[in-house]
Image (tube, rainbow, N blue to C red; front, side, top):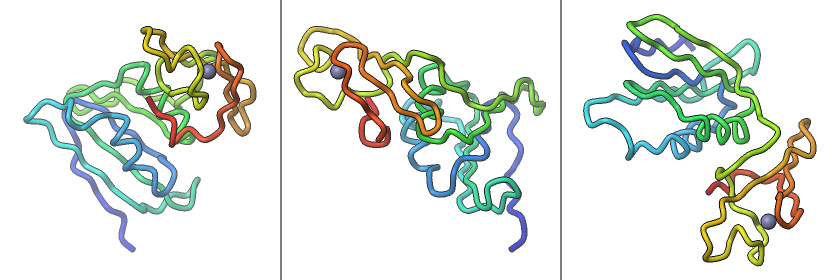
Length: 152
Ligand SMILES: [Zn+2]
């Protein structure tokens, strides 16, 4: 198959090297409803990649990701790279990486956890292991390794 060329963007964010099939989860994290009405989102699914075999790519015009969204992407798509584009140039490119604490990104699976009660307590997880990633809740110690189903 010929390599798919996606139109370059003037300003925005390119999320590349997303694991095959995970682009829609990345879009959910980005929250397309929060976009500027004149912005285009391009998604390439199942693109050949030397490193990964197959990968997905997401390009979003006129948006830079908040640190929380980057953390969520790091959990769901740990191979992703994020490039910030300004005036058609890559201003910053980095591999997503997980901080030691993840605040407000996931829901604790323990329904009795204080972070799931009515009080406005933000969820907080500590990274217990990195390969593969395992998190433990800072309040109740519950372990989480299935991030897709616990995004806040
Ligand atoms: Zn908890």
